[in-house]
Image (cartoon, rainbow, N blue to C red; front, top):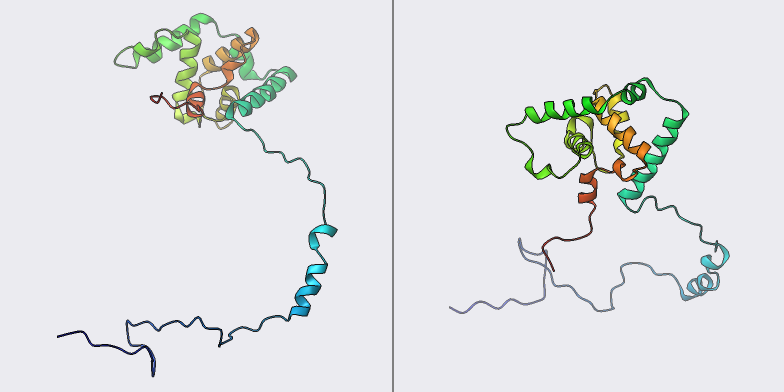
Length: 195
């Protein structure tokens, strides 16, 4: 049986599930429009010409986390120059032997040695361990010194050996030590594996 043909003219509301046909003819006006005279008046006065101001410089902040970490490190160094806190005094008395002992204790907690870190210096190993310790807060986007100070203020008791390593490296003039290695990896713009 062939399908029945339905007419397009509707005599009442649309049946359930059926949609009315839309008419795009210009015979029915649903909204009032403004007259042509009022449009011409608004064109004469341009709001942009009277309220034009020169563009001001916009501070976009830090473009990279490296710039943010460098600025944070400078602020922390200025605060250190003002006067040493009790923790900084304790950290300045920490010897290299104490740092080695701290690292040996951390290594003995593990089942095996960190083979992938053999070529790193002892200081870098201690700092990377601090970076990976999430109980002291996030390591990305914050200077190591600022992270240590913040963790200390929060009562999380970060290791004094980390502060000692940071202070010794800053005395040597090593400014790159403030940025966590994880931060460098996460903000890298290079894609590994594609050539």
